[in-house]
Image (cartoon, rainbow, N blue to C red):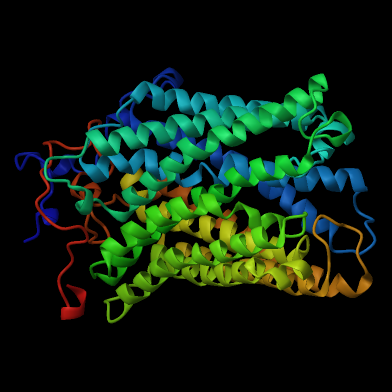
Length: 550
């Protein structure tokens, strides 16, 4: 019997107490007990509730954008209102949902459990990171209340510093504050992984989920200060007229693009890498096979976090780069696709001849792989200089971005939420509804965003709401797909909340998965394990099936 098949609890514990809600859920129901908690599991749930609220705001803005694009002449909203809507959607979704979604929720909850620790290294710092995140959110909400901002989520200068007459500064301050939350979270993860692993938990016994969060934490620590300083300079230029990016004040707007994308392309992998970690846990569990090429996947995670710092220039092919610089950035952009391809190959090889169970988390994982591959391939189109000249600034870029960011990150987030929901709450959700939601989301996503590849190829610019009538049919199809996608998002919100009261009790390991988090009760006790675990087994310790799986 594998050591992971042994439940870490006192054998004398009465069976009637198994599955009982632990201290962090039932001991104290007061708001004070939650708002002053230092339990990493409670803080993860606070993050989950907060980012879900931000997701709803961003999704509503996206729905209004798609509503506006049903007709070609900009008849539903004025140009100013439309600009504010897509900016709200971008700012909230990127900075307040996609970037923190998996690290702040699953990372907070699972990293200590996966490495056999009782908590993160700095529990109070962990709580502070959530308060800092809330502080940034309040500035953004205040911006919406007082009138909104129309610069897009990229805040390009000099539009953001001089020409926009909207409330840019509160939005900038909100994003700056959230950056400090990311830095605190990254620092906590790095120190925890280095210093708090259980006896026997060597680097190459850690789950890939931990490896990807370690890589993401390095991006948090190395990249976030760059965007923070850049946005502070924007605030100073807009507020005090200090010339940094505005050419009328002696600045250079291209400098802003360099600084912005030096962080924001690595930020793509802040969103993508944790999702890859989620998929690397789901696929072996539902194929009941060891993860193929474990070390290659681990090294690929670090390679992605490293190479991504050298490809920011492919966002600027049409902005005056020299031919030599453009060629170098194009080659590096192709190189960064290699570690991603390694992961896709390894997931596919893991599923080959596996005992695959098509339950809800696995459906999300398979959908993730399909969407991520299509998004990655179209990214190679954009990394090609000649094609980029034609598609830059069109809906082709919008479609590519959403296939990678939303299709990838969102499906991984939902797959992980369904995979670890029994561990989070001790409750099982209705499997049939889970499968329906996964299918709705996959179909709705493709109907929404695939037509946008065609629109972009045909030349429709992004961020325009007044377009030629010949584009109307594809826009109607895209907006219809958004309706299906919205239904797919609403279903989990309903049945997951329903399961908290009416779901059946979850066993410690409902999926027959391997990993320390599945050896403790569902939900875990306050300090995670009844007795401290010792690790003397390989990761993904599933039964061998063929010599190729060794």
